[in-house]
Image (cartoon, rainbow, N blue to C red; front, side, top):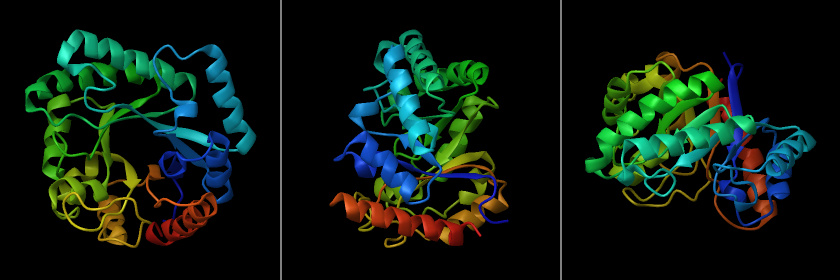
Length: 268
């Protein structure tokens, strides 16, 4: 079926050493039509974001001809105060959703938590955020990131516990290797029907190895990952490059273009 239906883009992460405009120009120049907010301090989408900041971000996206897909607002307890209880955590999640909707983000991507004592609170946050996000047109998702969402069957369990149609999985095969040392294809067919987005991230070196590499050069079998996901129903949604390795701007841009070409092959 090719790439029709997929929102192929790049996260800001590989360009965090450079300016926001450098990121947008690099992503657009490499052929990506979509971008994701991640780790770029010039354009953080935080609760209470000013109207002026929203206008500036939106203008920059229009200027470079790219559209936003995803933001990473919930990273353990640093961006959502799970340790303060469900009421406070839900309020913070709602505030993030409001901010994201203002800049056109359509996927709220959580990294979950590694603290089992906070799992029940997080289920509540996901359920409430999914309901509220639905009113804003923002899908709430959990990213493969160890802890509560370490392996595929863990992700399935979270989906079952949250039990809301506006909640799904943002699959990250590189993180499965990084956090567990396991095979990203193991039980992937079980979670595939719940996958609504994919982080294109490779990994080498086994558990806690290296993810700051160019996709296609590590241990993730991307063609097999995408074949399995497509067979499970993932035929539309964001496919976002998260890591490209570090280095000079020209090198990052060059690798971005190379991976963009590979995605046409992997998704063919």
